[in-house]
Image 1 (cartoon, rainbow, N blue to C red):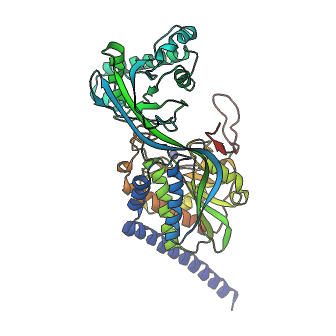
Image 2 (tube, helix red, strand yellow; image 1 turned 120 degrees about the vertical axis):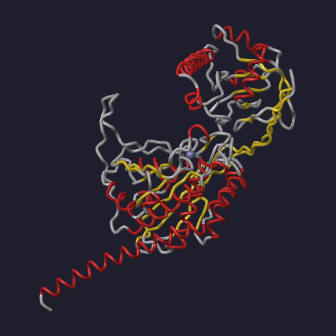
Image 3 (cartoon, rainbow, N blue to C red; image 1 turned 90 degrees about the vertical axis):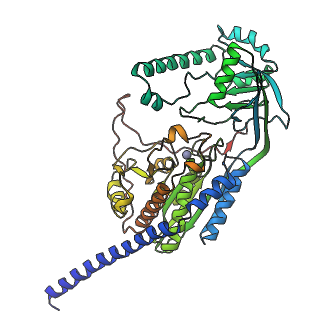
Length: 518
Ligand SMILES: [Zn+2]
C-alpha cells in the first residue's frame, strides 16, 4: 500500500468508527425513551411506595419496610441489591391522632401529632386551651407556669391571614397587601419576643410546660399556602405535641383570647420501638470494562411523616429506580458500574450519604459522576457544575445526547459553586467526587409539599417524572460509556462579598450514627 492509501484507509476507519459509536448511542437512547414512554412503571412504584407503605421517618417501621420493598423490586428486575447498615436511630411508630373541640361547641379539628410525640396510650385527654401569655420576663413566666396544670397550651402565633401572598397579590390592593405584610411582620417579631421573655426557646419551652403539668402542647407551623402546615418533630417527652391547621388554630386562638373558653379532646397514640438499625439501600449493575469505576444514581429514601413524602423524596426515589430498571433492560452490560444509593436520614443532615462516603473511599475515589434528585416532582430545569472546572465539557456532552423535547427550559451553570448541603450530592462534592443535582422546576414545592401534610401522591406530575427518569437513564448511559474519566479539577472559588474571604471547598462531614437516643 502506498502511504497515501494507508492514510486514506485509516481516515475511513476513524470516521466509520465515530459514526458507528454515534449510531449505537442513538439506538440505545431511542430504546430508553421508548421503554419509558411505552412501559413506564412510575405510577405503580409511586402507588406502592406512597400509598401502600406511606411516610418514611428515620427509625420507623415504615422506613425499614420501604428498604425491604426496594430490595424486592430490584430483585424482580434481576438487579443485585442489598441494605447496608450505617447506624442506629430512636424507633418510633406513628399511631392515630384525633383532635376535637368539645367546647364551646363541637368540631373535629384538622391536626396531627408531630413525629416522635409521646403517646396518650390509648386514652383521650380533655382540657381547656390557653395561649402562652405575653409576660414581662422569666420571673413572671415562672410565677404563671403552675396555671398550665391540666391545660393545653398554644405556643404559636395566630396568623393574620390564611391566604397565601400570591393570592393577596392577585386580588388585594397594593395598600391592603402592604398593610397585611406589615402587621404580620410586627406580630411575628412580637411573638418571638414573647417566647424569649419566658427564658426558654422553642425547643425548651414545651419541656417547661409539660413539667409544669400541661396535658399537651399545641402549635401551628403554617407553610404559607392554602391548607398546608410543615410537620416536624416534637420536643416534649411526656405529653403530646400537636400541630393544628391554621383555620382551626385560629378558631381556638380567638376563642381562648376572647371567649367563650375552648376545650379540646386529644388522643395521640404512638409506640416507642427501641433502638433501630438504619440502612441505605444499594443496588448495582456491574460494569464490564471498568467495573471499579462508578456512575451513581442518588436519591434520599426517608421523609418527614405529615404526608407520605411523595415529592420529598418519593419522586426522586422512583426516578432513580425507574432509570435502573430501564438501564438493566436496555443496557445490561454497562462499561462502568452503575450503582444506585437510596439514602436514609437525609432529613436529619445527609446522614445516610455521608456514611456511605465515609465507609466507601474506594468507590468515592473512582466516581465518574453522581446524579442526585431531590427537589420535587418537576422537570429537570437546572444542572450546576458544582464548582468542577471541566464539568461543562462532560456534562455538556452527555446532555447533548438528551432529545431536545425533554430538555426545554433546562439551563446549566458552569463551573457553578460547590453545594454545601441541601441534599445528598453535597456529601460527594465535599469529598471531591463529581456529583450533580438534577434540579427540578418548582410546582410551588417550598410552600405546598416540602415537609408538609400535603406531600401526597396526588401532587406527583407523572409527565415530568417520566422525563426525569429518561434524562437520568441517558446521562447514566453517557457517563458510563464516556471514553474519558471525568476531571475532578476544582475551580478557584470567588471571594465572598460579605466576608471578603476566598471561597473554600466544603469539607466532608461525618454522619450522626446514633440519632434521637440521648
Ligand atoms: Zn428531600
